[in-house]
Amino acid sequence: MPSLLRIAHFLLASLLVSACHGTPPVAEHALAESPAPAIETLIEERLAALATGNGAVLRGEPLAEAAALRAFYTRRAFAPAWSDPRSIEALERAIRASEVEGLNPRDYHLDALLAMKSELAARKVSPWTRAEADLLFSDALARLASHYAFGKVDPATHEPTWNIRAPDANRDAAEVLARLAGPSVDTAVLAELPQHPAYQALRRELLQLRLVAARGGWPEVPAGDTLKPGADDPRITALRQRLRASGDLSPDAGIDSTRYDDTLRAAVEHFQSRHGLTADGAVGRGTLAELNMPVTARIDMLRVNLDRARVLLRALPARFVLVNIAGFRIYYIDDGKAVWQSRVVVGQRYRETPLFRSAINYLQWNPTWTVPPGIIEKDILPPKNSAAVITRKHLKVYDRNGNRVNPWQVNWQALRKSRGYIPYTLRQDPGPQNALGRVKFMFPNNYSVYLHDTPSTGLFDDDDRTFSSGCVRVEDPLTLARLLINDPAWDDARIAAVIAGGNTENLVLKAPVPVLLAYWTAWIDENGSAQFRRDVYGRDPLWLAALDKADTAGSTPTP
Image (cartoon, rainbow, N blue to C red):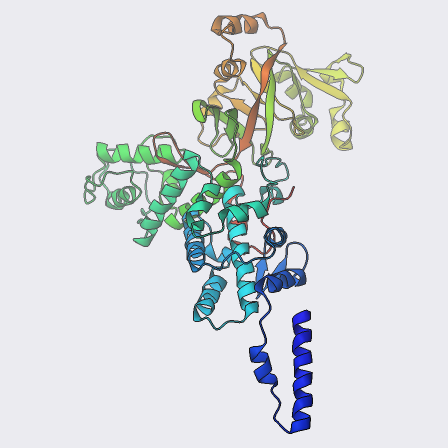
């Protein structure tokens, strides 16, 4: 390095002079007066010394965005980005504000930033310290911007079917840094967050529940017999206090009465509807479990779903179908608003409905149902009376040549033991008993999953609607069909005529409509009420663990 060579030559000359004239060495004096290397040089050298790719470490802090830093500083000829103290103060505010979004400020070098800010303020730091501080500050901003824009957790790490990516996931992180860094970074970075009203409502609810937690949380309702309207029970006082804490009971309502009156019943029913329970006003085991979930657990649910929102609520299409698996509901979204919704039945816990994105490209009226091999293996073969099951379900059996076979003449027991290829096709003709009902909605995927009608309409009344083998059964499929077709010529009369005809017919949509199969356990409904649902597939703990894990790797989404 030229600067080091100049210092070495100066020291050597000084030593020679002192040897000839008997004067003391002046090495320390020479070092003090030697010009410090330019900060641009030090930044360039420090970047070159860091390990290539993500995983570089600086002062014990892992750099999640090392590649973005190299591009960012190269484009600015390695000039520092944080020379203005106002920018550093604004960055600190931005990092601290990440807690409002359910994130951890320490993921963004907060402790190191505070320590370095103090050193820089003392004005007694080496140029190396200034260079390293600049790099750490830029990495903190790059990481924060990435988490705001795309979420901290990459679902693909624990969701094998995940194929949902933001259209700008491969954006230029260095350009984002250049755009955001400056004295107004604390406000500029907020634009990276989803601007969708659903996201803003979730973060407001997070703030409210954190206030509840700061006041000590909500009281627990003691266990006991089911509480019903008209009852007089000392536990009702705790019930009133609990419902007031969550806003289900008006602040004006009394909390000392032990009587279960109409006001309390309305509050209980409101709470039940917010938690996906039958709103019958009876506080039994299920309602009590939801009431006594700690506020900290609800806060974690909000944090998880806020991060899901950051992953999903970016550049959504204007018109699409959304299935919330955990909420057992389907929505038709048009121009950013849910113009229709209905109840659904989703996959059982051991046959989960997968999470992915596709596009509905056609409908099928009066569908036949060809039983998937997995259902044959799990539902048809295990019973000893397989032929009786096939007959009861109105299934027809065909051999590999398409010839009809009598199910009572097939050795199902041998097939059961073979656990191999099943040389038969099982098909159900259109009709009132067809498992797919009157219409199914088709979209390309690798999981043999689609939306469809069902004759088993009684299942829609259950609170926990995990009954299917992976497909999504829709309670009101004909309304969904009209919305997707989007053609006045397809009115109720025409649809009814097609269905009454009994023939299997395909109808290709004018344009494919995106469909998103997602998983939300907390959201805010159209009335502003916070909705919570049971984590039927056990997905939340995985997401929460990843959300709380220290970020030691690159956070930019992988192309």
